[in-house]
Length: 242
Image 1 (cartoon, rainbow, N blue to C red):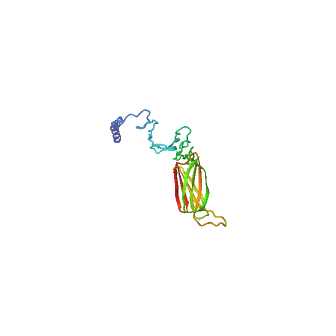
Image 2 (cartoon, rainbow, N blue to C red; image 1 turned 120 degrees about the horizontal axis):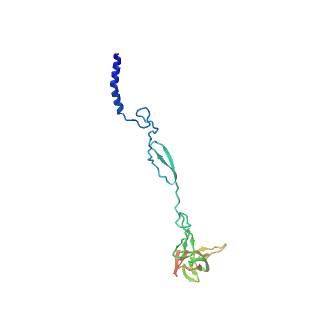
Image 3 (cartoon, rainbow, N blue to C red; image 1 turned 90 degrees about the vertical axis):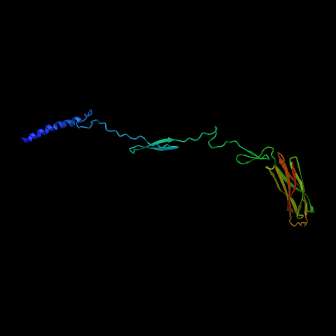
């Protein structure tokens, strides 16, 4: 009996307290289940992904740009960018090529070279077409180095006397060269021994009379130099300017 009274009193006291606790709670949202504080909707909290992806700018050619999210998901996008060659500077001209026109550099004497460095001939420039030397006489004498130069009908004629070491020595045209840059002809007359089998050479200084001819086409040089290369060494005999 006493036990029932205690239970009744406890229930009476607990009733207001329980009502106060339940009254302080907010009513559940629509569609809630029987459990207090839990929503029955199927909308779960959505995890927002950080879409701040770092994308590497693709270079020339096809390169893959890496994009990463906050969840660590690794995706690859292909940035297909191709590099195109620069357009030619002029129609019909490939990039990096030079024009096909031939550029020539002209020298003082009228000679020139093309773009490949090959010599070309300019109209009117002096060009040697023939050269020769003939011996008119040989005789014992003294050391003599003399000569003259004449120019006629496109030919340069050098006549003179050179000295040989003995009677078997003769004169030869050792050099006939034209310097285009200086517009100059250089003629060198030398001596050499002309021995025949069984021949006896007189041992005396020999004066050798000669005539050297150099023919030109187009024009004649502005300057002609005559040099003797004999027993006395090399001697400039004559210089003539046209």
